[in-house]
Image (cartoon, rainbow, N blue to C red; front, side, top):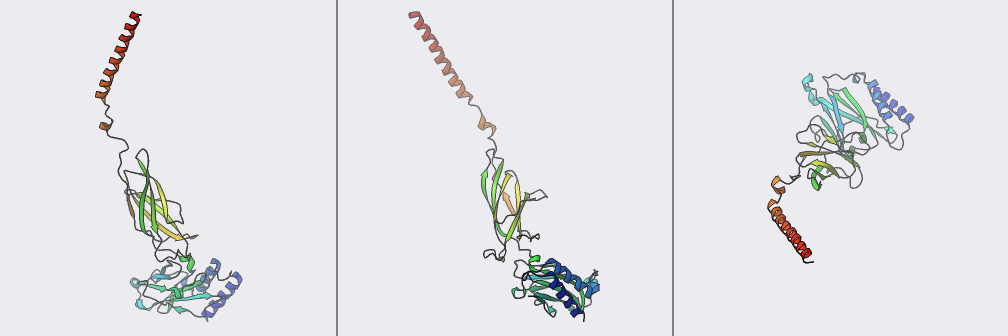
Length: 295
């Protein structure tokens, strides 16, 4: 009876929110969550000793997985009895029954993996976690809201130029998109954030997000070593994925000025040319005086 009350509530909420095409609005997801909490009041204050969802994530907008704590160390007698069930809205109707997780293995321990056959975008999902038949946690979302891409790969850098003073240099950093993200066909559009810092610093400097897979970094000191990392997110999303592996940048060492001996003044030549100049000047002076006497 509780399930039918839930579905009726969701249907009324869905009609009042007037979905545009197949797109889900945050309001209907919140209302669905509240409806599930009314059906199962114990969900509103989830006991810390019970299994609980930790995250749901889609790396490429084609599959997703959900993870939870198992609660084994909090008095659960039978961890194997934990199950995940889900419902999703198809067209204008919610499915009429909860379905169990299609794959408990592929995403690791305490997880449920939904491959592309079970993944639909712009369609809201509600999932619930049960232990020994009792619902202990639940959440609602749509797949595009949980996109967190895998890290970019293949970071490398090239030297652009060195300042005239020999103190600073500019570099170009390049990388490749996550291998499982279909950016070539435009199924998902990613933007990237590059961060860098000196090796001994703790604070990362963040650059503005870009859509390209390369970005110049200016005014790096030649006498310093730097660390660079990149992460990505779906365009117009606020959730970034994990950072790439750190790229170490060691710039070529150049002396801003020559050594003191390189600037040693050529005193010997100065003396030689000085003597020669004085000799010529003296000769011209004597010659001009001789000319005046003859005249």
